Length: 532
Image (tube, rainbow, N blue to C red; front, side, top):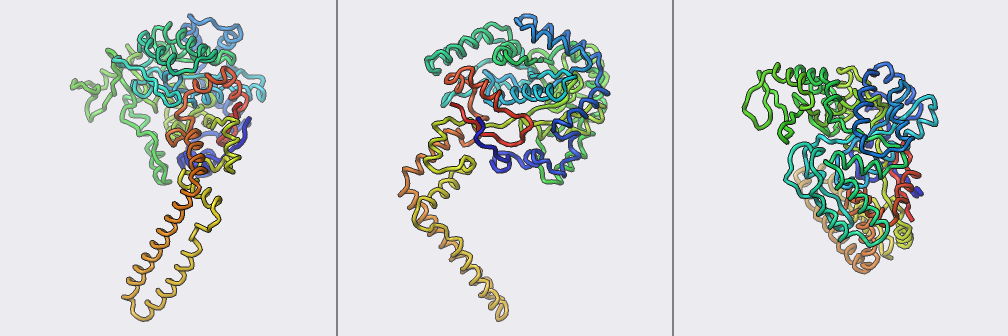
């Protein structure tokens, strides 16, 4: 059950841009289309319906049908897939890399936020069909980002010499990972089930794209999640005109320039910088950036100069060789899908907010942006520890030094906080500054130096007294520190480090059911969920 909900800003783990968006700050209104609310989805449906090319439904259906041909799907799933051809069917989409064994646990939060939002929309708007979609980032080429996952204190890594888009990596060499799982997983029924699932998907698939689809399909088998690999010739063929426009006009860079300036003026960090051409070229197991010069183009790593016509003709004849980068992928996705909402993490929300003008330039409806639920999983045992140490759940998010200082002050019978004393001293020196300025102004430098010396002395005394009290209460401080390390591994959010297997080995499929029950898509606060 949800035991605490916290404003994102109060956790201190999220960027100002993201926090302001989640808090619906009016100054961000121009950066998006509609704010996520259940009522705004009807407006989004109307807008998407008027712009979306229904011919894409047939193309999507044919490609997805082909991609699922080796999977034994339920009748309910097949019925859902058939519905994609209907004009009253819309999607809610999340995207993620092909991380080994799903990577950080927030992958599950993304998927379940997407599924649960579709459930809510179905209840609110029963005349429409809503399909949850996982868009696989099969064209990524940074293998080091996705070739590992953590299990407790162990890092399980897939070593490979393969290059190019990761979706095409062959998975036969993953036998070594099976051996590692057997070594580190506890010996129980749930662990054996996970290892069997890994074998039957990763080792029985030809490539990482197929393996990920098979694995995620089985993991969420109860919830009819639709998984799409958009690295397909027919899909890119339908997108050719947009690819050409990007090459000819540098559309994304030009259209987003004013937005980036506005973001910088508001003191927000720009999440992803645009390029003159936001495309890669795929050839011979390599995915290389297309570089635009004044009068020609280059493929990264090559000195061969290409004319614009060479690139455009290549797009016409071989669209499958062109791969959108992270920014252009948003356009590709929203063009292909009858999509209403994109569900992403904080960094994704940040770069989507850069692109509203780009969507307008391509005449594609900008989706509703919704953060995937952010969660801290906490056991009954850990909640008991918090209560014993008299720590509020919200306070466990504090920096460890700040948290231990607060608790030491609570434990101690002494008043270790000298703030009042420092304020008295500052007022006394204010009096001395007034006298100095009225007699000889040159004395103010000496007064200022003396003030700093005495304030530094009080700070030093305060630190020494605090450290002495921390030693006195070392047992309590040690227990606080260990508990925080449990909940925030490597001093970062649990969801960014832990893998779902840690919880599956202990709770089995129940962990997914617990998350499904407690994830509330339109609740824009950080959730602490108890598992027992």
